Length: 513
Image (cartoon, rainbow, N blue to C red):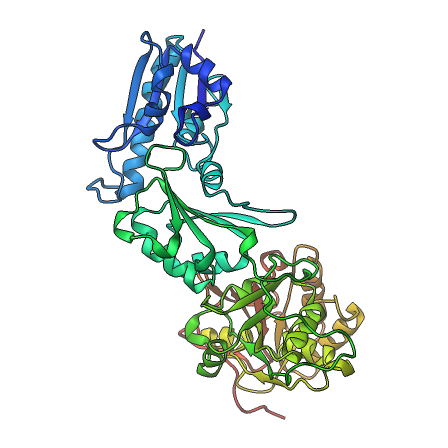
């Protein structure tokens, strides 16, 4: 008979917060194991010490490295992977001998705990039980005596090790937050809180429920004295004002003003609404005009992944929503601008090419927004980016078609494809496929082959300008529709489009009669 493996959470520090079940298992354990830092006492063992029986075998699993500096050939990750394998082998030896093993975990075993790495290696071989524990943030919230979330508030737990811009964005986009893993990361976390406009309401809690517990506003914390056993709370109550969420909206942003009721005259002159093209992805492809505009506005409105690309800064409110609510977010932007707020609606690529510009002008047809001026700032379009990577395939006349039939019947799409093919134009194909649209690209290929030869050059650009980009040059006859998805843009050449000896695709400027 093999022993049983128990992952036991011992809570945040106060031994009185250990659950009855955890206490019972510790007191009956044959083996008590715990992780510890280099040359340091195990905090989990300190919490559970009064419960560990004298007869128990103790296994101290000491990390070989805790800061990332190591001469291990696999680096920090390799050193830890070897450590976890060795630790699992030590515990497995006890389990094989029929001994029950209790692995102590500070807080909860599956919340940023080392137990999970032992669970990955041992749970399929041995009977395993997990006992939850009070997590540190729960103890910190009690220490701060501040309600963390209410009703429909969204709570986000963030590691302070995130890149500073990413941390600032996530802090701005959530109602309430817990920031863990401070220590050396504290200065960057503080800057991120300030950029997100959340610093004034952030509470620092150190050693929650332990001796030496301390809590104070983050703005008053000395960065030099921040230990690892500390965290930051940003409560949902710190939101200034509320508004209704858009359908599919990911987060509820803070509005400093409410839009006037229908028919009510604005209290201040309407501000100009900007519609900004962010380009296909890289910051280097964002125009100086767009950069300057985004640095001045108070609100950014758009599809979530595009809003994510706008750096967070103090005073900026973000309004991120889903991919099929263009008119709703256009109306929100117009309402804010009508009330004098400086607003930018953002789109990937160029806002006027299958972007938000059209939706904004459609929503602006409402007489309620007649006083709101709208200005569109151009951006590098996806077709330009793919064409540049390929060479010069759109150097002559070309057409652009979206295969999405969400806003137009497929019969219209097919008719336009035939017209473009008959006119022998280079064709850029947007939205070629999605999870729910898998047949359109195959149908489009068949339609084009009715008027173009199978040797027609085709360029498939995927995620151009972003990590993992790829560019494939093939032919219409060899194109495999199964390899095309929503992250792709296709350029189908004209009869004169050719591929150079160096693999560059270009279309001559001249056309023979």
